[in-house]
Image (cartoon, rainbow, N blue to C red):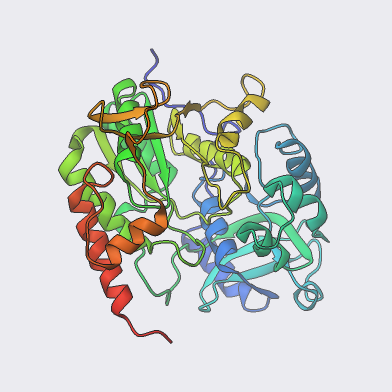
Length: 397
């Protein structure tokens, strides 16, 4: 087997960061350019483009790629890509821009993040994007609502990025774990990992998740636990709490030299099947060869079928996506088997498997009670209890 790591999506790992004299020149010129203030999602997207996580994208998509991605899950040149990465603006901002010009991209805290070469300004076809990407037009869906709230114009073009770290952004940046794709690839090579499985999560890891991870470790050289720490919806557990959970479970229950923790600074879109493909392609760019796709990956509510996020990979031809999806059934603890099982490995018996709803788990945590050890490791539960009890005790606004 070749020691070479998997090829990035599109063939080349993009790097849109600028340094030294070029960065100084752009920063000096930005003061006289029209300005666009990025939303939280757009700031996440900018970082993902800049570091190559969204390869082959070199900037925000233009109209040809926008239409092609929505209709075919491929860019205009035929590269697999399931969700258009757009820079949307409103009428007032659009009036300040011109095709062929440039604009300065600022974080909402005022930090100059990048400059975009404006190749196109086009109408934001939400009537095409929303049903294509989300398979629903229900504005109760958080991803649909986010697009509906965006501007009615899109600005396309390559970006030149000065920084991905806002100067005044509150909260944890996870600097020690914020590794770009080039860095994870270097780490895999140093560890001698030729095959790597990645686990995507926006929640703490419970026993079923742990089971999926360890099944993957049996067939791959290493495991990348790769939590999403960009913009999520209200009600999701804060990223710093989740990171504490990941570090805790790795310390107690994983083999150190076969496990790696790194964060992915992407925003959640809750697009279910299409987002599963996006997450897989992004991990390919990080150097991952196998990607865990479990029950209702990247879903929300009841908008998607239980295994729609697995079945969508079958819509691509051989060679479109190099990373291998690892399609897992729903897993749970079986009292009869005295271990984790799925419908593939053990017959389903009445009142045998332990399954708790998210609401039930939150209620237990808020009362300072651990969920059953068959559902959650006690060390992780204690981290969550500390958070949940302090949140429950906090005064409401």
